[in-house]
Image (cartoon, rainbow, N blue to C red):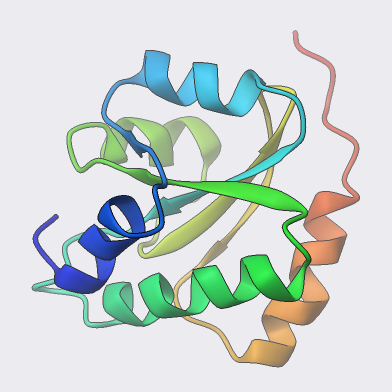
Length: 128
């Protein structure tokens, strides 16, 4: 990830950068709701920078109902396959270590306002 708007999430906002699946597990199993930002390749996908700007605004709009982290490209493919949210950039939401759902690609603000509450109100499926 070498885009200043994505790097800013870590350097200025203090969001963790998750570089192993163990990091993902530790972050998503903590109490509360969590949003993982999977940027994809910002050189090939211009929407990645857009979502990097939108996500902090969404967190404020939802009164910090979820915390955020940036997924490192080293584990991006593995995480996308594990959650079934295959397109990037994407926002993938978790609670108690369980994936609640995701929002791939950049969306209209109203779509985020409708989808995020639906996702956050999802009851995670019990572990198999």
